[in-house]
Image 1 (cartoon, rainbow, N blue to C red):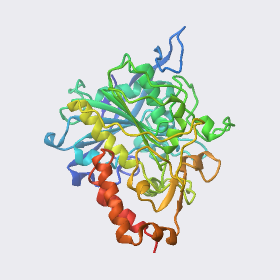
Image 2: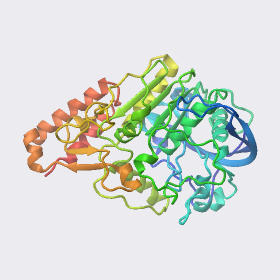
Image 3: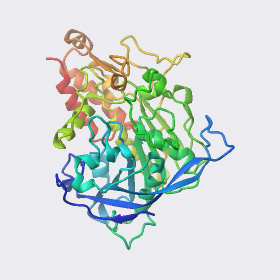
Length: 455
């Protein structure tokens, strides 16, 4: 178990890197950052075992090394506001700096605690040529942090989970400030989902730090247990294959553990996972959302606001990427996973996206995917949104595309704005009934749809 210190204050900026853009105090929450340090263990594949497609991988401890990293915590200020569930998110470092969802209204309105865990080396050291990791962003605050290799990330994540769990050390500085924790959920998106896939298949069989797992925009393949000095870098020159080949699903998630797993995928990851799809069971939910993609115009805009505040250098996104955010489904997954663990109420099973035998998505006459979860922007469209990229590079692949209908096409479909908004709101309410949208999203999405109506 790592040693906790904090809360951390000060530094060159006076606030934690990538903190929430929301005023969390208005929701009855507080933000606090802590350091955790100690000895972390790496893992290796057990000799003579197969690292096979079935995901039933066997790992064992290998080496140990000292580490020091941070956890950024959002928690209710009162026990009465706390629902007993802590979500520990594996911060994503693909951009060369950390990304995580600290603006979830389901977290803030639903009474969860959120712990944003820095567990990978690139999050601290950044990536060349522009290093924007924690240590370079604020050397005064984060200069002492050190993760020697991503080989130790799995155990560091476990130690962070244990440090905020029901059996944590209450005599030390407590990241949960005395809140009565009942369950801890591990969550990760994209690159982090791949690492959680490996964690679930190889580490979770003997480490019970987490009660459930949410893998968002998951490409269907785990990451290696051991990478040595290698940093996560999707721009690595060694990649000569296409993005689709590089990210194609390769393994199942094991089916012999008690902890439930929730997959929330866009159209893009549904394509990647086509060969490793798994049926819904008493311990697995697999959602696929038609018309969405890995990132969206809205998520890019939100990220840009954070980057501007924290003075980060970013790459401008291409115009015309997908315009249906999948984020609302993440909030629904938090809600359903909490009920699954606390009340035994399993999330609703949803239809899957339709595929040809060749692995290509079946599309309607407009080019919109058939089947799957159908958000109101798909059911009552103003555009053809899909995971079809605008260009062949990796960033375009993650962005998909959006092709708005002309004003004439829109009027032929809906007659007028009022008719469109009535149909859109009905589709949003149906999505709430089906369990894929939270009620709070109806008004917000309808307002966004109204603003998208062509003048």
